[in-house]
Length: 127
Image 1 (spheres, rainbow, N blue to C red):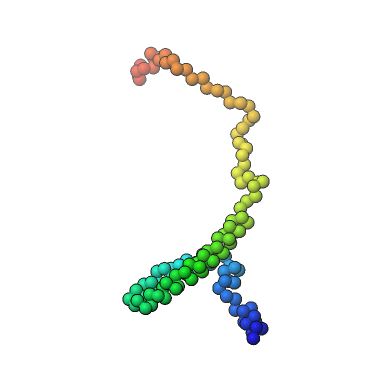
Image 2: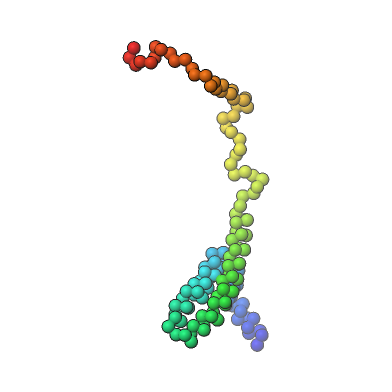
């Protein structure tokens, strides 16, 4: 009987196996779905019947546990994807060299606090 289960499991991978093999967004969507079903949909469906409201108290911790598990898978896959996509630190993405740099220092501008004399011939236009 154990062999039948192992053969069946190999043919039909479960949701957990799919989450481990797929992209991080798949696991994040499953985690979000667990939270929405456990905290929004199921309480709305059991709102009118107090006996079914007990079902909500049982399902909420399970939904939270599943969402945390799939969320951790999504987070681990996202971090791994960002590490592999990040450029190496040895090669800068933008060159730090200035193409207009001639190697000579630029002259400093001298600023005086005294007012400069005004040329009287250019005060009035047209003269």
